[in-house]
Image 1: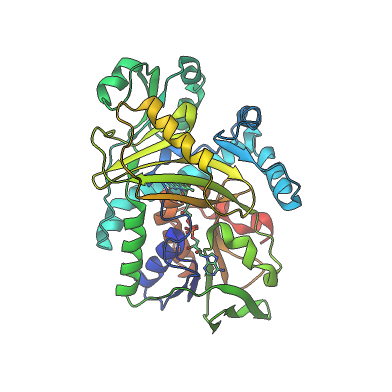
Image 2: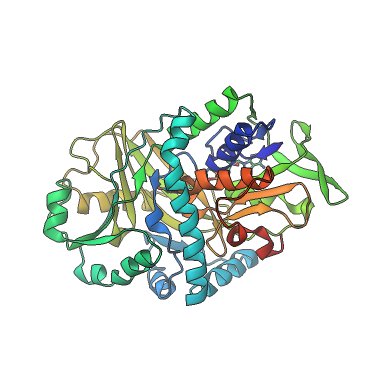
Length: 411
Ligand SMILES: Cc1cc2nc3c(=O)[nH]c(=O)nc-3n(C[C@H](O)[C@H](O)[C@H](O)COP(=O)(O)OP(=O)(O)OC[C@H]3O[C@@H](n4cnc5c(N)ncnc54)[C@H](O)[C@@H]3O)c2cc1C
């Protein structure tokens, strides 16, 4: 079997297929984790089951668009594919679509969260797994009050969440500056170090006999009789009886030969990483009014955020990196000091309905999709891999596969 892409999704699928006795080769244009799976915030968040396009969010987002450092940025230049995709995304704010996406995301997130501890242990991966929960911290009481419906939504999805008063939050998290209005606590969330997860998955895949070909860029496909007969790359042709496409935000770019229009756009984000910091928060935080995530591990400290829809645009953006540091200075008693280890950007593979595309292609008999995980690829990787491997091995399925079926986009 060929797995295209060595991000968390491709590697997790490769591992689960190897666990079922398959022969697996992974093709990666750079190195494992070179895409979005390396410098992300590493939070495992069933709490993020409700999609971004909740009723009302679009209007709030549009209001912030003029600011160069706003958490959301949309490049206003004409690009038909992007604007068509954005329009499709905006239509998801209807209540019926919101609940459909929330339930689909909740099932994959909850199953992944359940699998993670034993999955990591079974593969002997030390990714720094911890279960400290997550706090969404508010300094503005009105903003906090406006989020009550978010807690109700989570409760309807059977995901725990509760409101904490400002003094409770300050007592719980001495790293925060005073003036906290309150927080929403997600006790079920967890955290790991994503670089270590990727390295551990890659090592395990190889230990089980899987091959990871790095520096191999997929360029196209040779097809016959509704099957992919070979994958073309700069390093020659590769064959496999089944092909799993897990190319993250790059997915739509390589499927032209297949006549597929995968509705995924890159949602660009940034992070800055330091060595471990004294006075760092105990649990991961989201600094809510600034939409910045703070993750402190025993061996590092990271600020990450922003969602930029600007096409496949590469490189760092200094005003956005500066906004991360300003948020830390506002919320944390001891903002990170010393030169950062790394400044990073990555493309979240954002699907048009904010639900990943996982399952068989209806158009190509031996093609499987595992892409479009947006802001949640790390959180969802264990259950995605389980679903893909169960489907490919024709095993009974743990989850209902229908909500993730690529057929909803005629793929
Ligand atoms: C700032 C930020 C913070 C985030 N925080 C979190 C978080 O806290 N929790 C969470 O769950 N998620 C988080 N995410 C989202 C998460 O990072 C992604 O959902 C996840 O990494 C996607 O994994 P993937 O394997 O689908 O894609 P990728 O990791 O992007 O992997 C795709 C791979 O395909 C390779 N590739 C591309 N084109 C080709 C080609 N033609 N040939 C061969 N190989 C190719 C790429 O090099 C890449 O390695 C965050 C993202 C960002 C940007």
